[in-house]
Length: 395
Image 1 (tube, rainbow, N blue to C red):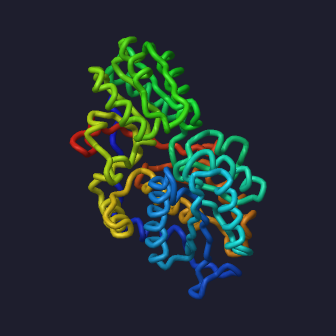
Image 2: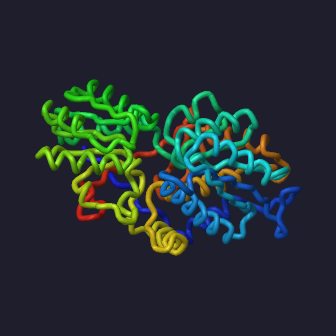
Image 3: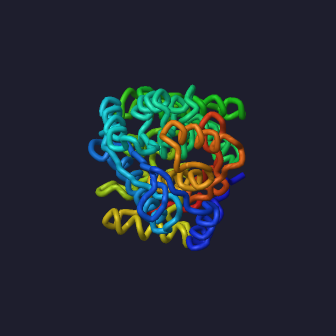
């Protein structure tokens, strides 16, 4: 059956009142600000320059909108936010992490990020050893959290998306024969592809073609496209980013091949990229936790604030996940007793225990009643949208 859209969010004024009530009385301590609030430093990491800059920029801006809202509440917790550019590189990400530790000095620090998977895997090993709580908006590989009890995800995991995609294809009956094209040099792409293939076979779908390529720098996908075409794939699953996806879809059309194309959340945001040809992905189905067109007051307020900050660019799911990360950290901190006397390690242990305790839930832009498993994976449901005339619509 068709996946349902998220229910509309509560009014922002009601949210603010609820947050204030949930936080209780103001606490004072050695991290207190002039108004008696406890200040928690949030250190963000992601690409602000380079080929992946649109993702890091979105997570940075989405978090900034939330931090401004939270601090305007004048509640007992304040967030001091700083974001470092990692250029999408592992080495740069670790350097950015060390810079954030220096910035925080003796103040309690939470790490927000990294935005992309490989840098996040590297940094999460550092935060685990150093005992900093870490919440990533968009690094989706299980490798980010595996073996680390301090690291959590706001985004879907890659295998989780692959499973959900196969279930959607089966439940909707949109195809019986499927092909897969993925980047075997990417942990994100490989993880989602392998989970999709395994689940599709389990559900009785026929996987007629599995094609790979080594890098998103690839420009000629005719071999992969023709393999799916010759095998009779009615749907081609693309667990990849939007640049190769648009080339694959364009080259398929040029060859006279017109299957259903289906992608994951890594493609979200493409319609807002300056100069991107939306016509090249017309008809694409994709999974996302966020719909910028959600008419709820909370979302429209977020969109307006985000566009002011970004110079008119609309938010995508990376921005919305970033926004939800800040509220998750804030609401969790509000529930902790004695937070004013905690250092980073004590705060890490307290937040980690709360996130995995089974009772902590967060309502956000990307889900209602979101909670976390002991693995660090978030529990929420995706929705599927279709690209039509440059917008997302219900399939």
